Length: 304
Image (tube, rainbow, N blue to C red):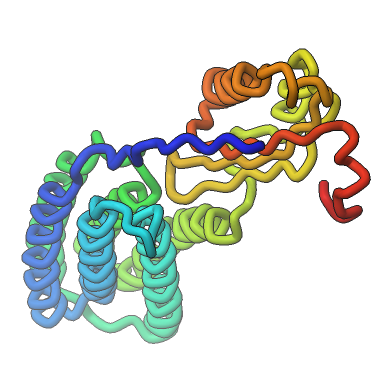
């Protein structure tokens, strides 16, 4: 006997509007910085503009993912498009990593042969970029922890802001000391800030795509908790994954007294197991299969 309640899939807040606004701001600032890089000859400014180009792609993916994830489930897609959020986050991580490598190579080249840059233009365009980034950060701040997609989108904007700060710092150092390698050093700082965060986003997305146990879910504790219920002898085939951020799924085979199949006790036990999983482990989507003790001889040896 199994229990699999038909839960409605909580779509959560609608992030399409803030993402669209931030995308518009990012495109505008990117175009301004491309012009600024051409006028001033600054690699730090060009690096920030290049980073923003990937952010435009990333935010576009985030916006598309936010729209698709709100589409209802169908018989062919029983979870709807919830996992698009994870795919979007993984793609954004790849983009961020790629631009980080490009900036690293170009910065090393300019460390060896530093070109002249126009510091006044760097400061003007850097301030414009930073202003746009701050507005974008304020818009996305509240929703940044909602899911992995929004976390990646917020990180895109934060990294842009850090890039703008690096541009301004380089311009000030060059103007004050004439040390033109500050432009390339600022670019390396941007890389150092981008890559570790990118790796974390990619790792978290891969964790979901590989259907690893969700963070915070201790399967040993889950097993012990279920086995502690009356009439339960064993728990096997215990698996936990997550479809998207905040949507954990658990399945288990629960071995109970043979008498439970004859005295009408199973429905009460199903309620107990699912209540325990919901209240103790915050897992709403569960599929529980009950088995009699005498059925154990029919189970495959590979079952965990």
